Image (cartoon, rainbow, N blue to C red):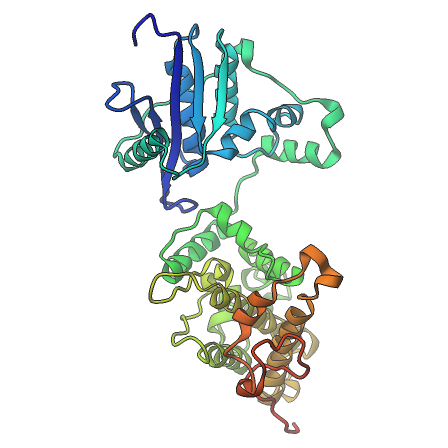
Length: 433
């Protein structure tokens, strides 16, 4: 760079292929001008691969490459990066960066900017709006993500600009506990790792993506899943239910480890997808029957499919994501799996595996139907904006979710939300034991 240059204007951007997946690849783009030798493409190193980390590191590299005596103007289309380096910076530092995503890259960038002796400005520009600099940085970021070898980006922080600790007045008991857990970094159990991998590859079959552990954990807390089922899925991922091998080392209770129906070890995977119990097969057949009323193919249900159903992506012929189908699938799968678990617990604990007290085909059918119809009724009630205000479900979303699955649907109006007696299109069974 010529020594007479006192003002530097640079555009930065980040890019990521398979963002949020295990095989994500992120890159940084730093653009100074057309055919400028300073234009740079970088491939992000390490496990943290996302569009956001690419955007942060692009700003860091631009600041590191600019002489400290030059005024630096950084232009970016990333509201996240600019806000984290400006308006959100003080709160993050006050809490000691506890539970802040991308904090190592952010801390290094903040330290680098503070070490400069000349002014630095950050300006947000609208992305993909024909701005030559933004388009140039975007293309460089894509090239960086496609590189085979990661680039070494210096994240070291001088002790002068390394802010330690947290502001006590900004801390709460919850935040302090999060800080303790963050520092202790408890290891993940082998069973949990195995279940995460099962879920990851099941989602790969459903959507073509390999989600990260973080995405899987986040997905089981999806707002479309009831709280009791969220707890159920969390325990399934952690393998924390007392089944199977749990009983093998407890004297006088070893027999509980075996499934009385199949005479094999009773794991959660076996209970939910493999057991020859009539209830398990019947419930999945009912779920398939309802699903195929509006979608031609019902996926093979595996343990990982249940845990990762919130990450399924069904699309139309043009590649457009079908939000209604995705929502119906996660409701059907989670409600059905939870009912299988409840019926199993009733059979083994309450009824003591007494064949005289076993659930009949009619009882299982009507229990499942009641579960799904209750969920449909809840969805209808949740569209009440007067009662639930901003937490209300959009009527259009509920219509997209259930339309095509209802009983006598041709006799219903286009908007059946406030119609009484709307049920799913599978009739109940009436028969004595």
